[in-house]
Image 1 (cartoon, rainbow, N blue to C red):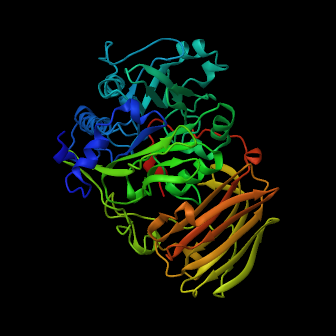
Image 2: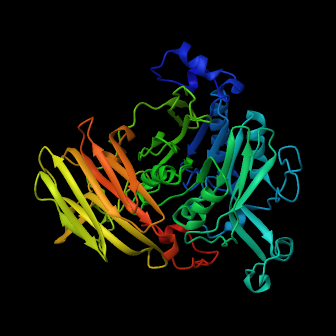
Image 3: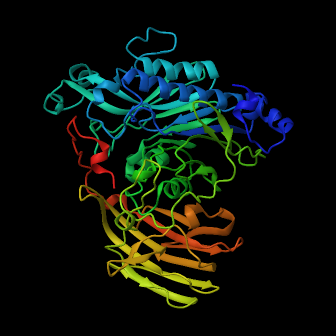
Length: 536
């Protein structure tokens, strides 16, 4: 790809950019490393694609283009999203079509790029992307393992009774490759989300690089305690997170949760999401454990995008800021200007405006306050409290004037998705929301007019981890320079002081009490069901 093609429309000086593009990796990696994530709108679900091979080729070509751009910018590790190589992620009815037998790198050395790859086209292609671009690559694939062989090698109990009728296990799988294309890690998703894939036994997977230690999880795993255990017990510096997220899962949307996860667990977080706005599936980023977002995207623009940023290796390192978003299309790639979120409609509530008219037509869901205790803010400044099931949230705040309906909400109890997956939350939520059909706080608009000059949210949590967010209009994350979180004994305090005088739509402390979670029960979706059956 030529320089002028990749960065068409760029405002940056070409001479400055060339210095960044061709700076040796060894120099970049001395005190920091360069990471990239690819948010991808999978090609293949449209009528133009007639067969699996054509769909796979279209997606792999975009992967190759993203990898080439990343390589030219000195990227050390590139992460692709969950289900990025499935031609129609909304229809998992034939998961076996996409499955390849992936070797276990803990039992045998494998370099699919230079080995016979007739039956492992996706695996070998990703391996070659790592080898040809001399970078670490993490991708999401489908692994198929014959029951008898897999159970014997891994000493799985009750294997015969758990084996599916087709005689194979099919796993949603992350794979990691080193700079030479060697397969160095394989992780099976432990918490499938209404998927046709099988539920894996506990497996905590890490891999080492010359710039740090990385852990692997996938999407819904981030909600549960095993992901925190991986961050806490296995000495990782950075969590790698391919995902196909639905914003209906939690009270925090995709990028809110991604940033909060990095801050709460004190690890860097590389999140590569899908881009399907109609199901609330969008939002990716590179997040520092110290300062939150370095670069993120949350925009229903319908584009596949490559995000790049530098992350510290040494605490006192001076890190050049190369944070950028590059739109990657079949015919062109270009630097995206500042993302404002203005593509979002003012009202995105599905029950109000109707179903999405296209995959780029964003639809939001209820703000999940049905079981919360909600208290409306009535004065421009003051102190209020909201309590639920013995858990109380207090708020001290100051505004220039309330111009919207804003509530303080508290929740302490079992949260769930479609009354099947359950977990325990203690949550404080300040939210801009409107009534619908005579009920308070049902619709969450994408904008607010109320500017908070300052606020202080407090609560005493039993939760093991507390996930914070401060969010502005069009779901823009507030810069960390405007807010702090600290815990003193059992009380957690979030303080916000406005610098930029822009309205807020949400402030939250989402506590997760993993010890009170019930056992995770696999959905065991039949091979003929699909994600679309369980989207919002």
